[in-house]
Length: 162
Length: 419
Image (cartoon, rainbow over all chains, first blue to last red):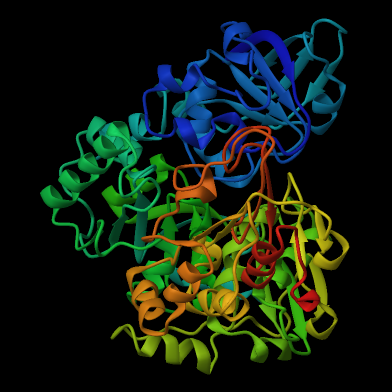
C-alpha cells in the first residue's frame, strides 16, 4: 500500500476541537464533516485540499476529545495519510479503526514543509520527500492493521467473524 | 515482575498473571459508555456490520448529555436514534432528560463503576473513574461499537508516571489546582500513552470530588488513565451506591515508573490555565488583570456538589459584576436537587446568575453559553483550546469554582484571597 500527495503542514498539539469544532458534531455524515475539516486552524483547508494530500504536523496531533468525527473528517477530505511527531492516543486508535493511515516520524514531521510532495510506503514505513529527495524511516503497519485500512475500518475487517 | 495498579487491573481482566508495558492484551469490560455525540456513530457502525444483540444490556451506559435538552433538530435526531437503540436492545443504563447527568458525574453517582473495574467510554474524560480505583479510559465510537458487540477491547499495556502527593490543601485550593499545576509542570503530552498513578499522604486531604476532578483531567496531559488507591473514602462512596463487591488492586512496592513527580499540596495556590492550552498555567494572583465576559461553573470536571458549595460560599449575598454572565450547571439531577435543598440555587440566582439543568453545554461550545468573537470566559471546565467555547477568536481560562465565582464578582480574573 502506498500514498502520494502534497503536504499541509501544522504545528504541535493540533487538537480535535480545531480539526472538527463541536458545533459540527450534530452530524455523523462524513461529507458534511469534511466541509468543516480543520476549520478553526486553517479555514481554507476544505477548499484547497486535494485528493491524496498528506497532513504533516508536530507532536501530540489529535489531542483532546475522543470524537471520531475528527479522523472521519480528515479521511473524507481525501487525505491519504497523516504524519506527525506523535499522536494523542485516542486519535491514534480512532484513525486506524476507521482506516485512516497515520505514521509517527519525528524527523519527517520537522523537516517536511508545506507544499512538499510526499510519498509513503505503508509496507516498509518509508516516507520520501520527493521535493527534497530526503527519505525517512517509520514503523511499518503490521498485517492486521493494513487489513483494517484496506477494508476501510475495524468493524468492516471483522464483519466476517461476527 | 512487579506491576503498577493499572497493569494489575489490566492483567486481571485479560486472564493473565503478568503483563508488561507495551504488551498487547484483550481485556473483558465491566462497562461500555457512550453519549449523544459518540453513540450515534457507534450505532451506525454496530448496525453496518449486522450487529443484532449487545454483549450485556446491563454493562452498557448511554447518556444523553452533550447537546441536551436538544438544541436543534439534528441533535434531536441523534438522541432519538440512541433512544430507539436503547429501547430495541433493552439497555438498562439509558439516561435521558429528566434522569440524566453529565456522564462522568452520573456513572459513579449511580454506582455503575466500582474499584477494580475495566471501563471504556466513547468520551475522552472517561478516565474520571480512576478516582474509584478502576481502570477507565476514553476511546472512539468504533471501539465502542466493537465493545458493545463482544464486551472486550484491546489495549497496549501502559507504562506509568507516579505522582506522590504530600501535605494538605490550603483554603481555596482544590483538586482542580492540583491537576492544573501538574499539567503545567509536565505539559499536554507529559504522560502520553501512560497511566498517571497517584499516591502519598496528601491523598487524605483530597475529597472524592477532588479526586474525580484530578482523574478527569489526566487526559489533558495525554495520559491513558489516571488512578488513585482505594481507601476508606472510596469504599464509603461506593458502598452507598453499589451492591457490587469492590476489587482492590495495589501497585507492587517495587513497581517500575517512567517518572516520579512529587507535589507538596501545602505549596499549591489557586491556579489557572490561560488560553489556549491546559498546560499554559499561572497562579491566579499573577493573572488578575484579565477582563472577563462570562463565567461557567459546571462540567464533568467541576459540576459536583462540593464545586457548587464552593461557588455558593463565594457568591452568597453578593452580586456578579455588571456585564458578566454567570452560568451555573450542576452535573446531575442529584446535585441539582441538593443545590435546591441547601439553598445554593437561590444564592446563584440572587447573585444574578442562571442555574441550568445538567448538560455538557458550553464546555465544548455546544449550547447554553457560546462565546462571541473577542469574548473571554473563566470556566471550571477542562479545555481551553482555540474555539472550544464558541468563536475561534474567543478565549477560555480554566480555573476552580472558587476562582470562577470570585472572578464573576469582580469582572476580572480574581484569586479568591483578594476578596
